[in-house]
Length: 210
Image (cartoon, rainbow, N blue to C red; front, side, top):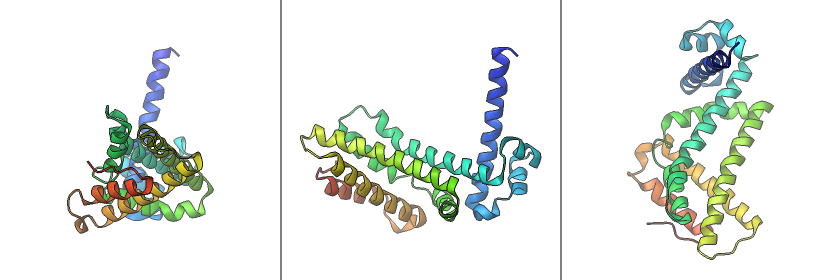
């Protein structure tokens, strides 16, 4: 098989797997993990159940892959604006907090998916490993932004203290994200971002409000 043919085949397989993952995410958001049956996923993706078994050894493997895809996508979506910001380290941290607490990251569908997966995380070792991996990735990236912002401002912080800052700020952002997605009508436009910027700034000792 030529290199071009192998690439075409590989890309085709990846697209089919992605379509199955997207169908799974749609059903989990609508019906929860239990409601996302293999038959339902096949119907939503307009494929046979046999094709699902060709790419995934079990429903659990597909659910885990869908969860990994969703959490990775959410993390990348959150950090993308900060990564592209050409300003100071403090500016990048400010942009990160803002993007974490505004659409499209704050979204009712994302909350529905998070809630749908949460119970499964507590009872499935593979899902728990995925949750730990994505959580640590987000927290570590947040910690790097905090460290760079503090160093730029001439504020010293030990590695242990930076880890505490990142853990606390991550928990704060998660809580606001959850409330904003579950009760969007309870907050004025931009309110979540303002609360997040003020609170993260207070935690790390570096004001972030524009």
